Length: 164
Image (cartoon, rainbow, N blue to C red; front, side):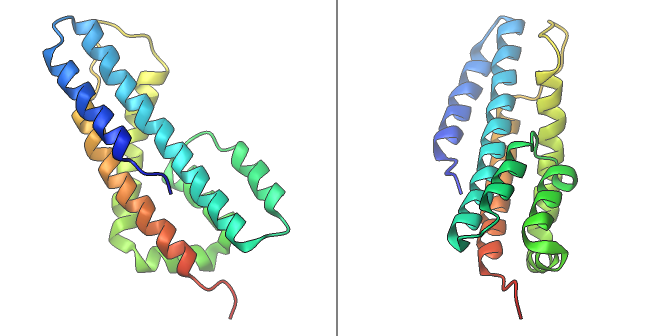
């Protein structure tokens, strides 16, 4: 699991710059950077959770799992995160984790969906003066929810028994 402290501090600095910036395009660029940074951190964090899980178990299929991980380019809960975890621990193992973390998983899913929508908007367009972009403080709040959810998920994942 990656720590989010440094990124949280960076987002706080970005929010201060965003608030004081008088040029609307520059303020939007600051906001876009915040969304891209939280998206990048989230992807790297999920990669680390999977890699740590595989390494802790000395799996024979380690290279297969890591190759699969290289082909995951997002953090959508159902499409990327859940499907990857189900491949890793099976449906039963994943449902055990979700059952123990029901509320956290719902919050994580919601935060990942918000982040994906915001990040995609920033990544797939150029910055226009009339473009509406979520402020860095929203990315900061999403980071907090995502970091808490992934930390809880990682801890629970490492505690489940995969065999009877």
